[in-house]
Amino acid sequence: MGGGGLSSEPETLPLEKYIVAQTRRRHPAVCFLPTATGESDAYVAKFYDAFTRLGCRPGVVRLFARTPDLRRILLNQDIIYVGGGNTKSMLAVWREWGIPRLLRRAWNSGIVLAGISAGAICWFDVGVTDSYADRLRALPCLGFLPGTCCPHYDGEKERRPSLHRLLSRGDVPAAIALDDGAAAHFVGRRLHRVVVSRAGAEGYRVLSRRDRIVETALPSVRI
Image (cartoon, rainbow, N blue to C red; front, side, top):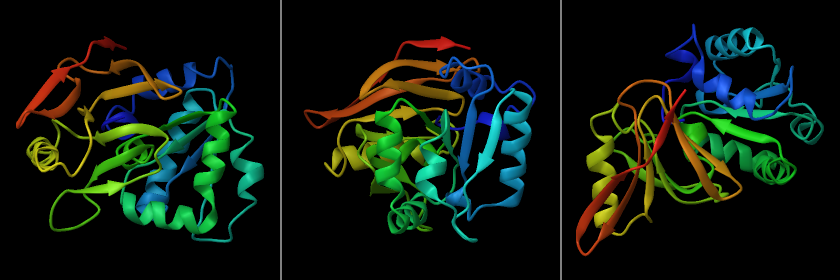
């Protein structure tokens, strides 16, 4: 999800409903990884409220308190949902705890992996991140999905020009860019569809070709 989600549409939760529907279970277990915000209590509370109302069995994994048995917890979920925040710091903590390996096992076993902003870009080869205070930069990520991901494409004014600059310089491979309210649904490493929760939200393929940027809106489904 490029942005929006439970913080922006807390009454209707269209994107979260779509995620839950992918499990085909009445009361799926969903685990929240709020690492990127330093495990903000307010963010965790929003997560619990949203997914409880959707009929799920929510839980959270905290890495800044006494850390539980991560393998047992993560591999026994129906959904793993990653929150937004500082992607670089999140990935550094995850690597220390061996979480990327566990997430890959979860993915290969059919557990739905989802997330917003930092929780969207983390799955790709490269993400466009605001983890640094000075400017948006390219960040190597987990590499489950091919190419680059840029969230908040219409929600933050520096996103589009920054992605275009990175592509023009050859710093990142071809990208999928997601507006706030847009989500890319992958099955394996293949883009299945783009879904949007509001009018005007789009997902784009963006690449550099012959010294110019080519930006193509992807077909989308309103949910």
